[in-house]
Length: 566
Image (tube, rainbow, N blue to C red; front, side, top):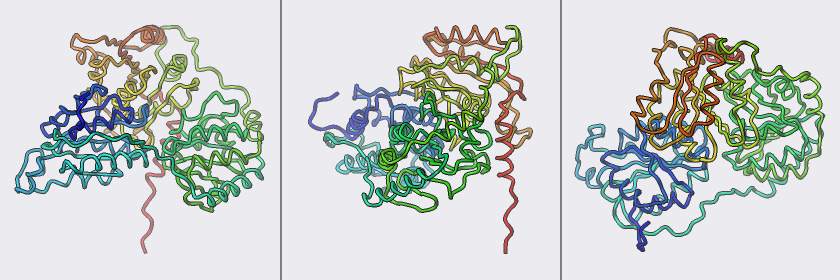
């Protein structure tokens, strides 16, 4: 790193990323960002990861933010920034602070009424900022050197405060101009509640829960956004209640807790879990997102009169709302006022009955591979050093029934549900959490969207184990609404590893159709120090039974007729 008293605009941005703990950023070069990349590359604490396209780079930044807490991706003006938009919209929906950085036109071009390449063919050039305003919490154009430090810092502050993406566009002719050296600055945003409102909310919630006969707890995805996972764990221990996780919060709560019931997902919950939650006379949902997907087409039976709903900046107790109450402080205070009550847990243990039979098969090694058997073997692979990335589709439902070891990572994109997300996200997550071996579950239809990023993993020596589930089409769409459009052209997927390697790297691939072949593949993958690509062939109709019910209910919600007009 240069030891000068000042840094360039690009150097300033790079230094701020370094101070945030970012060690990698994802990039696609284009002539508007080349000078910016030159300046960022001078920071030897950061490593640029060149991706195959902007969408994949954005998915990688999404995965990196999940592992590291914040991420950055650099693209060029319009053609790059527009290609990035889908991934940034997903990060917005999933509450991930991704810093989207774009090179911009020369500061003189708009004033001189120039028509530029990579634009809409008009002289107005602020439209990218306007477009990104819809999917970020801050969208800025930096055209003046003196303003650059403040604009960069304010954008980063908003990304971290709101756990959402921001867009920073830097004009190509100022990226290498001197500006300032970043002062030490703590980007720390633990919002403080209104003390009187906090006290009243805790009193109301604790009275409500302490008077209940069999209360339960449910973890929601916004626990991460609010930085309140540890506080929720305090409440689990203090209360003794039976606890469940919503599907997009799987992995936030240790599945080794003695009072852990499993996944609450309405009618497709873990056995007995849904019945316990929905029959409770009081339940606390911490950071939930009640959507058509998380409620199985709004068929989950949640009664608002029995609900304590804890959101990042407000609490609602049986219909009464307390604003300016922040989740972390509320959960910590509630844990000190809650009375232990194991009734819901005792009931769960009683009605659960015998444990379900293990996911095994007594068939010979030559038996055709089944969905059930595949995931029984993936279960055995998991450890505290693993991280599971599950793609949209049948992998959602199969991964939900896996029991995670302590500290095993888990990521899913259930709110936005953009197919193809998992490949880029696996790249980013692996770089952000290098001590965990990523195991990726992706269907053939999803993989066709983003297959190129396998080459980036090989290029940089990333070592995920990727299970490509070849069931000849879009399984999740088939169960929601079938049609000829759900059929895809089959590929020899595993052979793409040879194409993408081109004689370089240490990737390995195989093709699996039987149980015996699966055993051999997993044994080799666990020992191989490099990317492993295992293509597994399943019957198109061999899907998780919960997908069938979930798809039917979501389809029913989608197909409601229009409300009558007056």
